[in-house]
Length: 124
Ligand code: HEM
Image (cartoon, rainbow, N blue to C red):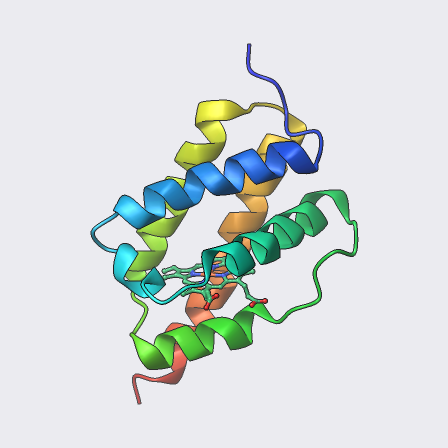
């Protein structure tokens, strides 16, 4: 049986494994070409730690960040579907339990809202 996500170290391993997949993915890798990885990974560790352990470690604005990404290179339904697929895969490969379910649920709801808000705004 796999363990559940229980601390920041688990989040770090998960997020790192997820981005290894993203960097190898044909649909997603181009969005991340100019990313400063040291910086982005720290932000993402904080974001996900806060999302499931309520640590107050993240205070950014993901919607705004992705509006910016979308302006540079349009996001798409296919991209979001791919993102979610790889995120779920990264979770399932390592973890199971309450927090593992919670983090997948959070990813799904944020991705859904993000898609609605961002993909709607530029088509007209
Ligand atoms: C097609 C799907 C997505 C793509 C291509 C994408 C791409 C990116 C890129 C390029 C950045 C900026 C990195 C940088 O410049 O340092 C970023 C930041 C970020 N992404 Fe995504 N993203 C996607 C979906 C998501 C989803 C679904 C979530 C959350 C569930 C998410 C969470 C974040 C967060 C928290 C940041 C950091 C924002 C900040 O600077 O505070 N992303 N993303």
